[in-house]
Image (cartoon, rainbow, N blue to C red; front, side):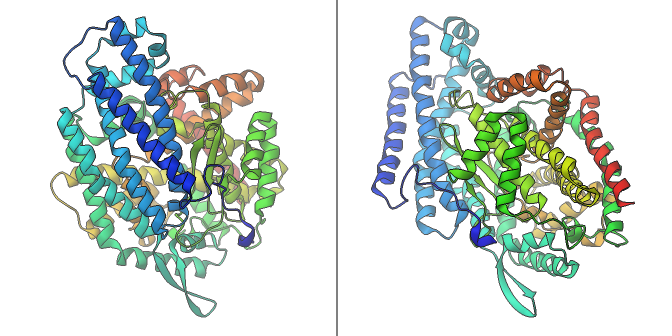
Length: 597
């Protein structure tokens, strides 16, 4: 079956990295950045002293933001094109070289961003907004820039930090990505020793044979243990850099900077995390019910993704695509049309293979087009993942008419459409399934919910403790493992066999290895629970919801999360909202328990 899984089509841009047209595009993007540098220099865009806003200031702002949006669009498309090769084959030396060269040239754009933020921070932005329609269209960006400028170092320090990041945090992140995607793991299969890529080993976590799952888990742990030294160095390097820069920029903690980047405040986070912790006993009920179905006294880590039987429904990729298109059509022709384009125009790379990164993601490519990476598994979980990533593509579609600065969406809101689409497909599958299939579908969904609520809380706890301890010194691989196990014990509790916790989850998850995105994990929980809350509103008033929903998706880079939620009478500061969203999951757990009986 894997022979038929599609690879994505990138020829809509260039015929390849070796092509003359790609080289021209690469050089054009570099020249566009240079043109923007000249414009910044011409108008001395970097001043820090307070400035009055004159008619000339308005003209300069409008000229700069027009070219700035144009350049970002061009550069982001090129970045996605190059990354499409790196993410699917980390052994592609040419792709790695082009990515490195691109990062070096793109540094100037990052330096310009810092100058632009500082310049806006020196302006009377209320006057600017009053006098410029273009500015009013970018009001959220401008007001946020004003606040962010107060957390910037001196211009020379910001420039040095950006340049050093290429050989610091960004280099450590690249090491983790390349090293982990190229890990080859030895495992005994069918009486012979095989060498499999880490992505294939981790896919064995859903194998119906428990002995295969156990061997895969032990082989995975051994491989991460052997790789622990360079990966621990990567972790320490990135977290040390983030700690230092957060302090120098006047943030109390890296978490405060992450909340600012995600357009939420501490009150929202605390309310959500409180509701999440209250739900842990319910998730442990689910885990114990699953153990009973599998005839186990308690689940081990390697049973988390186990199918409930060895004859669960197999979903071919073709079946998955048709089902998704049909169910999306029940919401809108725009959504189903997006899915049809994605599958027919080669937007999806679905085949697991050596050198390809694990997991799944969606990235914007150009205009209204995205590209989706998945490692498709022929089960409902694979269908659900495709629906999730297509939700991101639908979000990108609704952002098409926005400028690049208007469409900068925080992680908290970036999951809105993906969770919504995933929920549409799940509910449709449940309606059409018999009792046995319902159990499998609920299991796939509860797997995801458990990961997003329970496991992500463990990752959040781990990262909080890691940042705190990293202030004093580097941590050994063993200490990182201990922090991870303690976090898993606090969240999974007696829902799992404590002797089977995954001590090396800090090495697995790429989310920890992004110097520009600390606390990458809690936004997924926000997205799940916010998406469930929106789905509940949709079921109450489908016709009234659709227009408001697409407007919300097109506005996620122009308002903070609380204001957007308020359009649907959702108060994200209230623990009760998060409890209501988790009640949807509790209902699924109750249904799952009843079906298992």
